[in-house]
Amino acid sequence: EKDMGADLERVLVTQEEIEAKLVELAERIDEDYRGQDLLLVGVLKGAVMVMADLARAVHSPVKMDWMAVSSYGSGTKSSGVVRILKDLDADIAGRHVLVVEDIIDSGLTLSWMLANLTSRGPASLEVCAFFRKPEAAKVDIPVKYVGFDIPNEFVVGYGLDYAERYRNLPFVGTLAEHVYGGSKPT
Ligand code: PRP
Ligand code: MN
Ligand code: MG
Image (cartoon, rainbow, N blue to C red):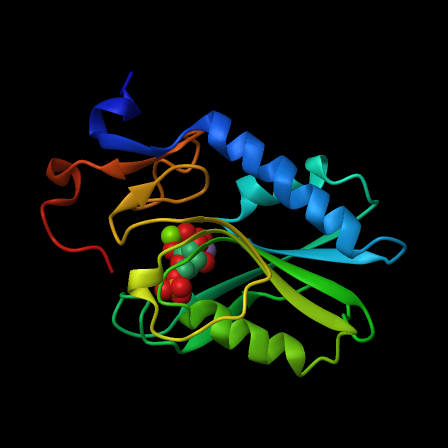
């Protein structure tokens, strides 16, 4: 059995810190959307963990839908050109939509998604990003709910992957250099 812990350099955000932040964000969301129908839109696959936990932390009866998007081109995800791999199941016109993301890195994925979703005419459109790397921002994204601002390092866990691994770590840590071979994260 492989020990994921051996691939980590250090813990950045603990499981306890994650749980406390979920409660804090859920309280704000309950307050802000009181009396309104709320649709949470999760961005596959990274947002699966935060979506599942946040939905259980709020007390309002939310609905959930999912989008999967992918960047074109070179394999780096910094082109900003996005295509939809899986669209929402339902129309969002006239609805209150909260996009739930695990992390904002360059911001290009969400920038494209917000433009796309705006064109569908939601009643409101906001973003909850559980992690954000301010130093990596290429575009400014208006985020109503932020969990943690973290340094621009190679982070994994709580949905965040490296080559599809480590998503199921219940905390967030930095990846040891021997795992990714010393090349900078993109
Ligand atoms: C990651 C992350 C965000 C996006 C952030 O997704 O989950 O969705 O990148 O990067 P950006 O701000 O630079 O656009 P990824 O494309 O790796 O897919 P995944 O969620 O399936 O891991
Ligand atoms: Mn993602
Ligand atoms: Mg990823």
